[in-house]
Length: 417
Image (cartoon, rainbow, N blue to C red; front, side, top):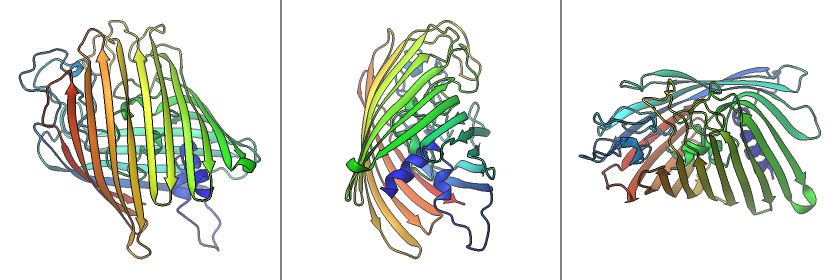
């Protein structure tokens, strides 16, 4: 029951996850201001030239015929490379680590979290800024304000929280693992680009426990600028249409003595924020499930997204985009992880995990493509502040696009403070 409550508190306010692992000395008064963070350092090597673009493929736009997000190297979903060798692209690209097919050490993220709890007020103020060092044109070093919000909990006897600012998605469950220090493995799933983006707006979270049935129900609803897509697909900083996107998740959890089961249904609806016409809509629905039994944790997610075609206008910050093409995709993943507690001392926990993901997508009037990915890895937790991860990604082109060598070997050392 306690573990389930901690998971939901982390979903409602990311800063809570750091507080739960920290305690002040018994003689000291708790400080209302707290600063935490982490450093994510990795090494990655991609096959081929680090992209999904086939050699001698003259189809344009080049990014409409491949999954450019497939060769991911870190928890942010950055690709090893997005170099299309001069072929025209329409902006449907991830951020790039800029390493191509070369093995390279990387500083993936330097994260700073600041939280303030005003004394005597049911208010939390949270900000997360990240330094993202990168190499290459279009992917240079950035400072990202990933979250910045205020959270009000008006009732002491109800689990109701109101948020205003920039915060994580409310769609599905993968957003819970956005940060490298929280993610079991190294890389996100094939569908994370649609469900794990941060956005600016307001949201409400409510949870009610039903002790007689050993269960709880929850609702998470948001109205934001761009919905739940990542910032490489739709900008979050401003609404280009003037109409918010509504998203939400309804969850049910069963907390028994030896097993936890959590089920959820999510939806999103509103205008596309990569163009300026409010009548151009995007719709997405999804289902998720998690089961925890002892050291075994199994999670799965399924989504379906459909976007109307938009107008001819270039949006600054989204690359050489000329038109918001009609788009549809469906996909999902299932992940299993088993953790073995090693005891005290330096070695705390060893986790082995595997994930299978699949994605089918099509831009209007272009050939649909189907890809899948097999992910396997190990994680070793040392002391309370260091996690070492090693991972292999096997990317496969199943239909609609030629096979390319774009498998990934990647790793990550995450220092939390």
